[in-house]
Amino acid sequence: MTINAHQFSTQVVIPTLQMLDQKAGIPYTDITYYLVMGTIANESLLGTWLVQEGGPALGLGQIEPATLTSLIAKLTAKEAAALSTIATPASPTHNVVANLPYAVALVRLFYWHNAPTPLPVQATIAAIYAYYKQYYNTRGGAATLAGFTQNWTLTGILLPSATARSNGSGCTDAGQISRYDLGCAPESPVRTRLAAGGSGIRTLGPSGHADVNDRQIDFGDIHRVSSAAVRCPGFARPDG
Image 1 (cartoon, rainbow, N blue to C red):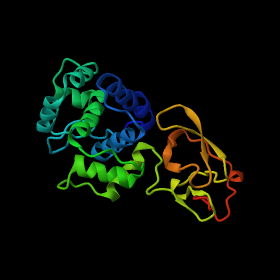
Image 2: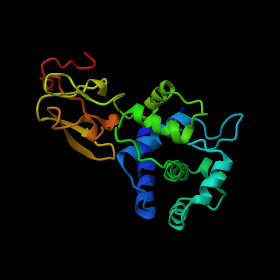
Image 3: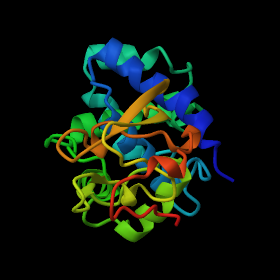
């Protein structure tokens, strides 16, 4: 059984990423949130496995002890001080298994120290997977896009599998945002919860005015939109 994705997100992942931003200067963005959640979902099935059965990997991010030691040695004084605020007096190998915020922080720190290229621009599963595969799982790892996409569902995060596209009617095609009724009328408001927490209004309007990807939706608490909001010719709701 996995961790409750919404509680894990709001009570552990987001506060930890915000702490690293505030105390260590490691930027917290929606993309970093998606990347960390996707990594943990694929590595440990969102906390189903805290240690690798038959292998050495540890914690939510399934980090190997040698990699953990190397990562800890790379931390700046500021980063180490930030990590110490959520660590217990036990060893790093114990913390990474038993301390959820610590394990989350290590996933973010791993990317910070080992991924030299900028984070993905597009908030799509494919783009996040490509970054994860290159720097975290690596070419020699067993991860695949199909498996990553399947495990992504454990996060509860609703992301398109590809970038939103114009449907030819002058409106952004929200069809790839899957099973929810999203309005495509010009200036059509869609009330959602934002990815970083808190409620807000999203506007899906003509392409070029509002890109579906510029602020993602936190699926677990999305408010369904009436079918009456779908007014674009040629726009088909994904669930019919």
